[in-house]
Image (cartoon, rainbow over all chains, first blue to last red; front, side):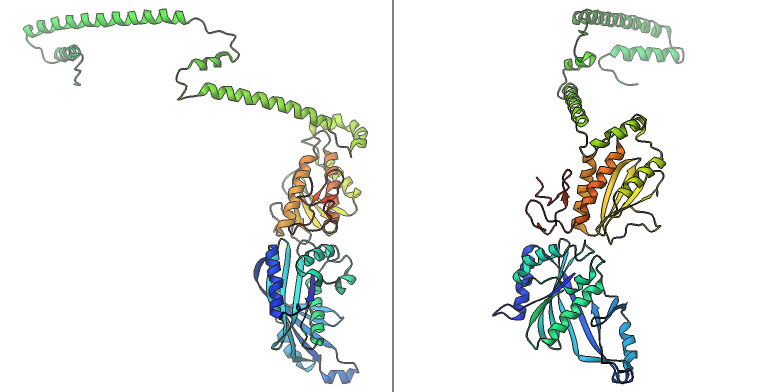
Length: 209
Length: 300
């Protein structure tokens, strides 16, 4: 429901900061429930199509989330989000003429999935290629379908283990009003987080969805 | 022939009888047998006299016992106290216990019925006058109201609360089953018996409430364990609280009013501690009177 970035604690390594976070969660009473992975591949619009249509190159992101193993998410920045079956990747290979994979830009977040009462918490390390770039924390409150309704409740929960790194309300929530929260909203937040981390040159930071 | 060491006469007698039945023996033998027979009969007479004596003794003793007193508080069952084999069958003490408990039960039931009759629902007090007309009719038949009447009451309640939609179905016979959808917060399955609420199950808004054949299923429990389990618990408490057998429609309305207070389920902090979470759970309790939100542990 909320994805955020947590900055690396002063004088600590990224791995140590993750450990501090997870220890706090475990002290709260959260139970470890395996691992999770969110990955994101970037596609450029092929040069040929740009010149013919006179448009500037748009980036498309194809993402996977281990929480939805049968789905594949394709997003444009500020644009629509398409939820497709997992074999969408094969289709992208066929569309090589229009979209080219920027392999170097592949970014992913991997970590542990925790459950605390009805909360799902995923603390992950964001890596781009070989280097770890930041920490991501995703918090979801399962009983609630309207993100705006339970934001205050989420905030209180996040404060209990993130302290003063608790994020502000994500921008996706602003446009949602009273509509039902969907997995696509989570992916948009991950995409924004990954974009932010890409721009931060090698400075490790954490993000919250 | 079985040996009878104590009564050798009996053995003998039997032998004589078999001899009579057998092939004709010599006359000398017969005379011998007759004398034995006479001695046996003398013995039997002696025994008979002893029995008669014992019997008259018993008669005399039984007269001494006298008539059991009729004014014993437990009547004939009071005689059980005279049973000397107490240890094996403590019937009497058990009987006394049973009487004691039944008296206590009667006493408490009396007190409870007195209290329940006094405490009418405050919120519905102004409707008393309206329903008073209908009451004499409804009272004897509250358990078997016509389905049409139930439909009307539910429809009226449905119109009362715009944020709550009530869908009535009768998947199993005449008993109604309500699917109450409260905003985008939760769904409640209410099983009715006539106009009495029999059972409630609270589920998440995005959970499936239908069984495979498209009926509302009441056996499906919520996947979101903690929260809705607690709310289900509270809803059951609520339906026990709102009881007014004479006016079942008022009960349903009161229950729905209470249920509607869950519309702010995730937005209302606890009125006592001011926090949203306690042990990872939000305020699930709603006060029956004020409808304010409290944590389960903060409500006292």
